Image (cartoon, rainbow, N blue to C red; front, top):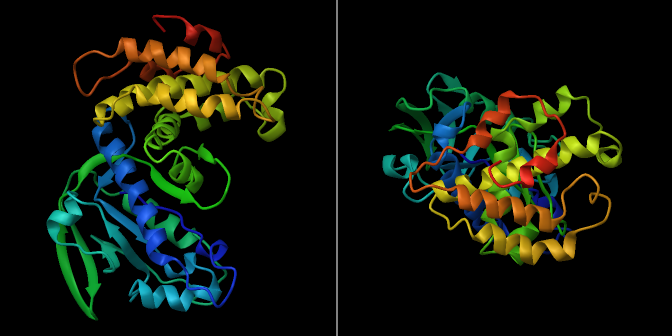
Length: 328
């Protein structure tokens, strides 16, 4: 399941402008499609799985109060969770789930509506997502839906997927981050690198698969400006290169040409090296070198299980330079 964060309140600053709901839905769906493709194709590499349903969910309280009524009307919300989109070819699509259905519950779970006057928040969505993630990854599930004012039940047989929510954050920044549960990608990647956006998505998914948040916190690292100071530098660079290396089989297993990672970094890297993150992140040339080695290590079998997967059970040691050597 892919769930995409949307913050339309930042997109509609004037009350006389119609919120671009369909534009939001289009980019959210693209993100969800890429995320599902990566998460399902690489499920066997993930020790934390969820039921892959192919649903893109949203809630009324995600929307700023100034446009919430318009969102409820446009997306036909009739309960706590709306189905913003159904990914083509997914288990949910095969079961007959439709965009703008309302999801009242799944299996034994029933979702609760938030206060209609609450400030814009994704807390309701995140809570629902965690409940769904905890369900069996490969057993039939009953979806309790409401469509056109009528309740109905559909049985969906999910497929295992890596346990991660995929979220878009709208804005002008090149945001890309993961916290072990969520992958967040800035909408600007979709605008400026539409044919290569799967590269940063795969990289951030790799962070979650390799449990980098837990491993970094186990080392007591500091974040923000502190990430570029002292021993923190080695730990963060090690995590970044590990994610670069794992992103290559993630892309290949999902049917993407892994060489697009080289193309992405050769385009993106020269313009975005330096700045506050330059000490805690490898140079783009170092990233290209690690990716070239990872591509060379790919065998013909799919899914490919790279040796770097073994790193997730080991403490970070800060020896990032060893990852640039052939045979990592």
